[in-house]
Image 1 (cartoon, helix red, strand yellow):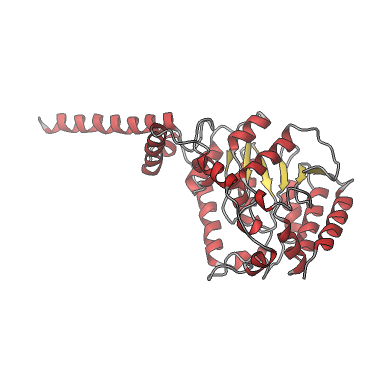
Image 2 (cartoon, one colour):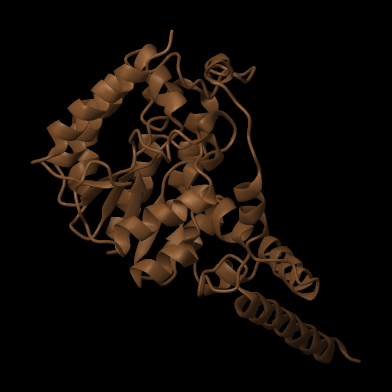
Length: 345
């Protein structure tokens, strides 16, 4: 074969291989860029790599789930069914308000909408002091300034590996919801003392939950609040009530957080739903993982069913309350007194 024919053959073979990889990845779609149906929850809800997150935002979607690791327990396909709107999960584990605002602003610039988990841990501005968090913010900022396209979206080795694994799991009849079902069944054992002792649980001290806590300023909360439109929703997620007790004990966390919720409600056009309550659900350790930080997937379904399909009653004893400027003070005062009544020295 002469050099010219060899080059043509090599070129055609290369094009064929590239198109084959793109077609394979596009048809399998393990991360749910096109559809969230029949996808593994690990890929839909746990994976939050920068490129995958960005590719989800540029894909067809109406709602984007923004928040901390609590969003890992949220099935976007369930939210999609209950809301009747295409939904993607773009959470960042251990995210800060600064990072989540970055994502929310990008989503709004794309004329899309968010379901934003306004979490007490993400409201701790002190976490920005750590290099790991600073570097991660810059990484996401750089990624969102790039311009992914169909080629970069579907032609990459990491996606090919995920597609192959998806095919293997299908052949083995692996349950799409296996990790969710396992977590729902697992019985975690913890006490107020064990949660309290875990307030600075890692050596690097990057994730302290009850010490070194400093909330964001009122101006920063208002900036986030005004970014939202009437089609967005903020969600105040529940934790096991032991955390409420400790939030009330350390660093005025509860006071800072609840005041931020008041500011949010009074300055946004979006709906603000709160599941931060004292009730049978938040007092039952079977509804949460170790230390009560994360609700189980079964509770996530209850939350979004409440938001999208049930009558939007504002009864205090409901699981979930739609907060407005008219009921916010009553809600916060009632909750504060309830938590104080639970305080254990």
